Image (cartoon, rainbow, N blue to C red; front, side, top):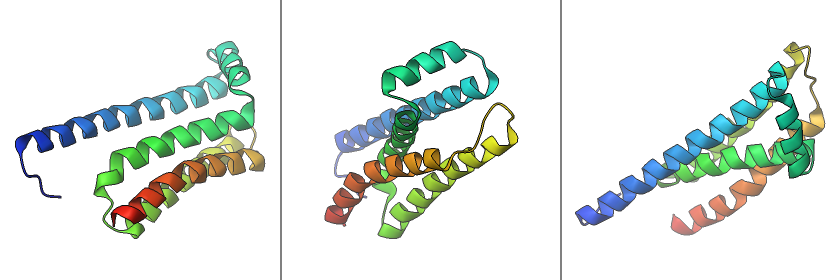
Amino acid sequence: MKFINREGLKAYTQRNIISFFFLLFACSFVFLLTFSKSSGVGLRFFYYFQWIIGGDKSLHMLSSGLITLSFHWFLYNAYQRRTHFLICLVFILSVFSLEELTQLFFPSRQFDFIDLLASAFGIVLVSIPFYLSFRKRV
């Protein structure tokens, strides 16, 4: 990507910094929710937040959608081909699948295939607009 002037470069850098901090916030938010439920620390607040969102499946869709949105927003200008976009999508799907599979090793948690599907649905739902805008750009 070529920049014509300094102001364009400055705006591009600021957008990347903002998207990086959004990615950091989203990952921290999801990690804290997972840690809270696994360890029992702040469990009352976790269940209250889950009740506000609309339940367990809605929370899975929201957290996976938030992570996907932040990853695509951060990496959007780095996508040169559709393959890059699909690699990022497969990476996000595999991370959430592994996160769900690790629940088999925690006695306080249990694996649920419906949770995995809710996460995948949130990932795909957020990825569709990015994919359509990427197709128009390339």
